[in-house]
Image (tube, rainbow, N blue to C red):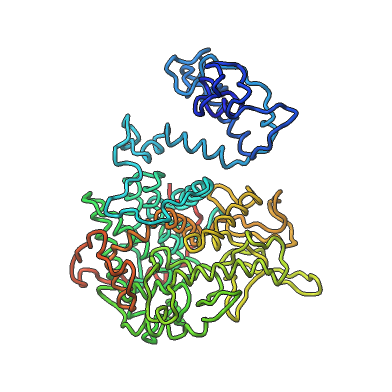
Length: 633
């Protein structure tokens, strides 16, 4: 009610969220001359953000509902058929004043705030059974009041001592975080926890996307999007599935069918994608620390799945770890050498309590670093072209103030290294050596993403080549740039360089709006220079816009916004004994590693023989599955 009144310049009883001017009557039909929020005359209209028209309209629909269900919800009797609302109806304005013509109605409004209002009302007054249950109103949403601990309760054992937690954020980021969370919650198969590689294009599941999804669910609890009960049930369904899923020495196929889990798309057994999956599992193992039987089972299953991974099997050329294995060709002839996203592979392999790799594996990993160390766009750092390589491991590992021998020698840590990589990409976009459209100080960011290609275009005497899915970016001796911007590249660097990431995200949103921002946040990528036709056409952005969200790009957006806001994932993982062990065996020291864990370490549940390797050659050789997205009803 105060919203409508303030938009109309009224500050009487209906507009009492702000103090009225001293001479304003309690129910004056017109505002006092100096009233706060008074509407200017039509001859001098106020330029408003596009949001306010939608906000006012939604508020008016609450105050003066017209549709039957709206009227019923507002208290106008069954079916909304009563001429007047019940006296105790919520949200109904008594003695309403006629709404004068308001110039603000003619101003185009940003859709974000209308959506924000609706989502807020759904939290305050949830009505659908699943919404009520998610808000903590008991099984089926049947309780009259939510449980006291239902929404977003973080244990005191994870005290918030991070300066980042107190940094005020534009409300847009709260909306972005929730939309991105809902990608995982709403597209995942609740029966087995599998998450599609992409959406809405029909897709197989990606095990790395599942790892990001497992990381998303506790974030959803802490932000109040879902209840702890709902989160642990989804986590438990996921872990039960993978506990019985066919694997090779504990490693899983990269792409699997959304329903059955059968190998899809001639997929490889992937060490790095298994590591991303395991990181999400270990996060959940540490987060769900209660005595509830489901939380105990979560910890036990995560332990079982992690312990049965034989990292030494994946070392055909020790001490390095191989990229992939297939039943048709065995191990590929490639090993993980630094610097890239596989840092996580080595940390989890070093931390294994059952099949750890030798500490020389980290020495081998860092032995190639010098090829990538140097100065680029005024930044001296360890380079890797796409920004995801500077972000993935950081989702779960807080590298602030901890160093291995290489970083000690060079006087920085991996967190600072990622900050410099972020700045280098921005400065490249400002320089824009290939003269692509749209690049600038607040529109930048390249990573592995979709693209408009394959296509070529002759331009200014040259021959531009547009790529399809590719790992774009800037590094020493390597530039992959076809004009494609991936919002995940900049936004997932939020903790490293908020001073340049915050304005970049806001400008991309405000400049391009719904062309690139929709149900689940930012679409994967866009290219303002692509000359081909759009499908569908985008009113605010020439060129090409992806129509999909990609799970492994959504995951870092969500997790790194939360790490910036509260350091949630980092603080929980401080207490994970296996991650600590991996870091310490890799030679890391300093910072939080010098402090005792904030939470209790789960005791080992048993010897290695309790966790037999599940190897199913029939499943591995089964016909390749091509699955639609939709989970089993």
